[in-house]
Length: 206
Image: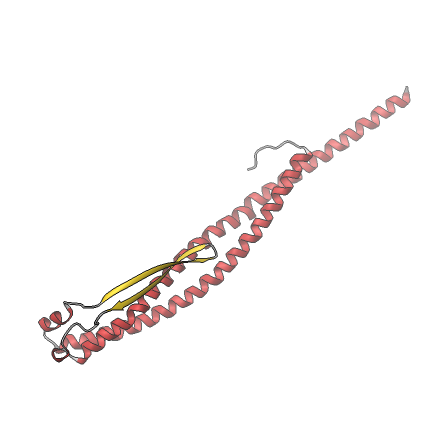
């Protein structure tokens, strides 16, 4: 609810300016919400594609690893993967998307992805390691995409609440206040006109 305001032309002008600004802000926020939705839906499609690729790659890796586990002794398998020689170098950059700050992740695996003697392992283990290595970058991109979707969803919800607050609360209140003051000023003008007519009649009668 707006605070009670004085029925003056100055106050009416102020309220009309506020109403004009509220309508302009409402339109800008609606446009922003619509653009955010477009970006959001595109990111959701991207995330689904990445998730599908990652799941397929990891499924192949797990399948090959299961075969390698069946063909090798537990001790030999544990020894082959217990001393990794590769390391991950990650960098994070920030991207501004419609005033939403989204992290962009880059990760690179450096070093030997096969830290074991090939003569003591199976081809399936090599394939499993290779598939896991291939899935790593996709996993990083998937994490980036999912985080972007989360941040965009939060911003869309905030923008939606602001749009609704303007559309269903502030703008109707301002419109009501403008109508109320305009009616009061009109009544005051009619009342003043009526008094002036009575004064003229009294003056003429004298």
